[in-house]
Image (cartoon, rainbow, N blue to C red; front, side):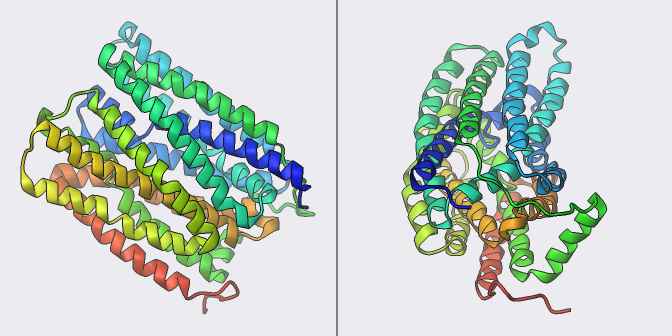
Amino acid sequence: MARPKSEGQTAFARFAAAGILFQGGAATVDTSTIVAALVHGLTGSPLAVGAAAAISRYGWLFPQIFVAHLAQGRPRRMPFYKFGAFGRAICLVGLAGLLWFGGAVPGYLVPWIFFVLWTIYACVSGVVAVPYNDIVARSIPSGRRSRLLAVRFFGGGLVALMIAALAYRVLDLLPFPQAYGGIFLLGAALLFGSATFFVFAGEPPAPVEDRRPGFGRFLLGGLEVVRNDRRFSLFLGAQWLGGMVTMAMPFYILQAQRGGMLFASDVAILVGAQTAGALLSNPLWGWWGDRRGKLSLLGLVAALGAVAPALTLVWLGMGEMPRDGALVWFGLVFFLLGAEGNGRTIAYLGYLMEISPDGRRPAYSGYFNALVAPASLFPIAAAAVGQAASFTAVFGLSLVAAGLQLLALRRLAGVTSDTKVRP
């Protein structure tokens, strides 16, 4: 049921405010910059850096099939959102406390405790995804969803730029790892604010199945969707290739810091560059997704996804460069990563909402994210390849995957909504 216009405008504003604060909070735990530098400082291991990124992504995806099953049979999905949104903020407070007071813990235990808390944070965060997609899709018409996501990322980018400036000062003034504890605490405050705005936006009544199937039958329903919905299955394949593209994300910062060319506080400058890329590109992504379609936007950002690994391969072939040159080069790389990352998220969320039937949206979100979850482990494989061979191979694989994803999306563009997979 559509909301009255004024009520819909209020919901739009509150969802946007929630998204803006979330983006600011997410910048404090970005696995390609802040967390990658922190974990490398704690462990000195590229494999640990890849594991942190993989845990973040897999933990976000893993709970969704269970949440989808539970949410599909209930008329209100907001309680699931509350648990995940407020829970992840509390987890982030725990991580901040560990980093701030970690001196009281034997040094060798700090990385282990960090990874335990980080895993809990990632899994609790994943509870949010299914109710978020469903509530927003039922509250905001399709023609305004890309605009909502663009507003979220634009405003969130402004907040994240302020976070980057504060992080620069914090990293410059406080010792390691207390500086990162302060950054995480700021992120937790922003996540609490985000959850509060979203809850106050409310949710319209949801269609509920007369009889919810058992979990086993629910899982079999996912296989039926893969077999019978060609758009869903091809989109799933394209997202797996997207996972291969992004497997290099945690290692850009390690290449930028190669040979000690950058200062610790330069991490915040690269966060700012990434945020600026996201911020300045958002008006284009919002306009493109609503006017030219979410699938067209997926193709555009997939093409853009090839540029950052290509630039990094050129960098690896040039040898060492003075600090200023390294900062400018990787400032451009992270600017492009920010633009591509936000465009990818806007297109992915918008297209998944679009191909999901209204009455089964929680189920479709759960099925899709559960099936794509193993691709989130690619950063661990990338770290292993980087240590066994070279990071040149990692960025080369990322570049090849970007090309293959473009081909997969072109195939998806030729499929209509009623096309079925041939037996």
